[in-house]
Image (tube, rainbow, N blue to C red):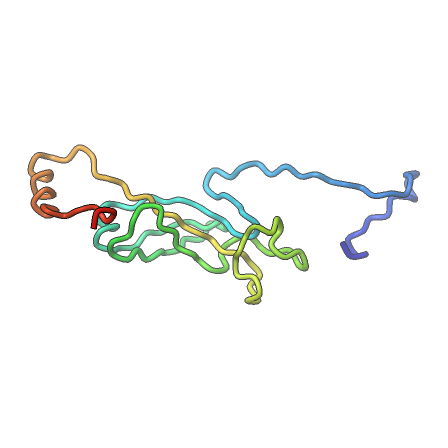
Length: 145
C-alpha cells in the first residue's frame, strides 16, 4: 500500500503499529466473484439451445447485455463477456489471483462469464411428444457417437 493510502493514527494516542482490516463480503444472489471476474447462470429454452438464439442478461451495473447463443449449445456452456466483471484495483492485479480476466490487455475490469442452463420442456402435449420423437428418431447422444 502506498503512502497515499496510509492513515496516521499515532497523534490520536495510539501505539505505532500495523492495522489489519478483514472484510467479509456477503454472497450476491446472482453473481459469483472469482478475482476480478464474475460468473452467473441464465436459463435458455430448448429451442434456443438447439437452433440458436439470443438471451439478454443484466450485468452487475444493471445494464442489459445481449448474448448470442449459437446452434447446438449444450447446458453449462460459458460465454465470456470481456470487461464486464469487477473493476480492477490499481496495482493489485486480480484481487485473489484466481480470476483470469483480461489481465495484460489494459482492461480496467475483469470479465463476466454467463453459463447457460438449457430448460427441458415440461407438460408437453401428446402431439408435441410425438413430433419430438419423429424429429429425433435414430439420434444418439453425443457421448454415444
